[in-house]
Image 1 (cartoon, helix red, strand yellow):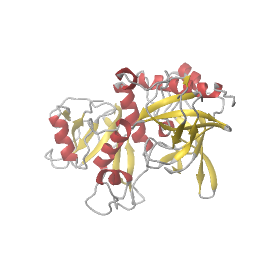
Image 2 (cartoon, helix red, strand yellow):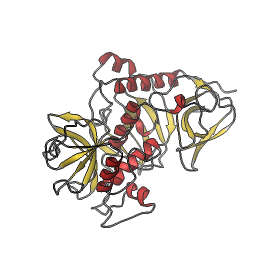
Image 3 (cartoon, one colour):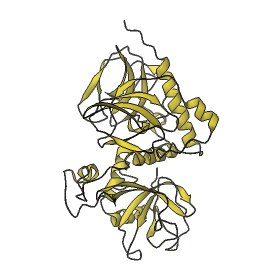
Image 4 (cartoon, helix red, strand yellow):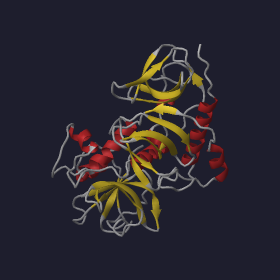
Length: 365
C-alpha cells in the first residue's frame, strides 16, 4: 500500500485559493505582466515556500509563453502543447515555476499558472474516485499521462468537456491529469447547478488570464497560419483573407467556457458587432455618442470608416488608465514582421474618446 503525503498538495491548493481570492475581491487580478497583488498580508500567506513537484501538461493546444522570472515580464520561450512539464513552485501573482523540455535538454522558467490549472479556487479536500481511471493529458484527446487507482486520495481541480482535472499521487510524487466523468470532492458525480456554475468574476478572470497567456503567439510574416484560425476554419489556412483578430477572441472564449454563446464564433468583426447588438449587449464609444466605461472582459471594436463597419477587435483586460484602453489583441504586426497577440496599455488611438474606437461588446459572463 502506497503512503500518500498530501501536506504539500494542500499547501499548494491553499496558495492557489488565496491568490484567487485576491483576484476576485476587486483588489487586482494576478497580472502576468508583473504587477504584484496589493494586499501584502494575503500575498504573503499565499506564497508557499515548500516545493511541490507536479508532473503535468499544459491545458491548451497552443504554445504557452515562458518568462525568465516570477514577475513574468521578460520572455524566454514557449512550452509546446505536447511537452511534459514539472511544476516546481507557485506564486501569489499567478506565476508557476516550471521545468520543461527544450531542444538541448531541459529548461526551468516561469509561466502563467492558468496554463495548467483549470481553476485556482478548488477545494483543498481530497476524495477517492471509487474506480480506477486513465489519466489523460488534456480535457480533450486520447494522449495519456498515467493511471489513477480507485482508492487514491485525489484533489479535484475542476471539470470541463466531460472530464475532471485531478492531482493524484504516484510512486515518485504527484501528477495532474484529466479523468473521464465529472467529479466533486464528495466523491460522486456533480449533479447540481451549484457545483458547476461559476461566478461572473471567475469566468471574467479566467478569460483575461488566458488571453494574457497568449501574448507573443502569432503567425509568420502575416501568413495567418495560427491555431486560432485552424480552430475556426476546421483546417490549416494560410495566406490573405484569413485575418484572425476576431477568431482569436472566439477561440479564447471557447477554451474557457466550452461554447460561444457569450462571444460569437465568427472571424468577422462586423458580424460580431451585429451579434452583440442583437443580444442587446453593445455600447457605442464616447466618440459615437455613448457614455459606457469599459471593464475587464469586454470586447472593444475598432473602425476606420466612421463607424459603418468594424475592422479590428481586442479584449479589455483592465479599466482605462487616464483614458487609455488596456487591451489584448490578436493579429498585430510586430517589429520582426510577424503578426502576434499583443497587449496595449498606452496607445494614442486606443483611448475612450478616439474615433478609432467604435464601441464595446459586453459578454454575458
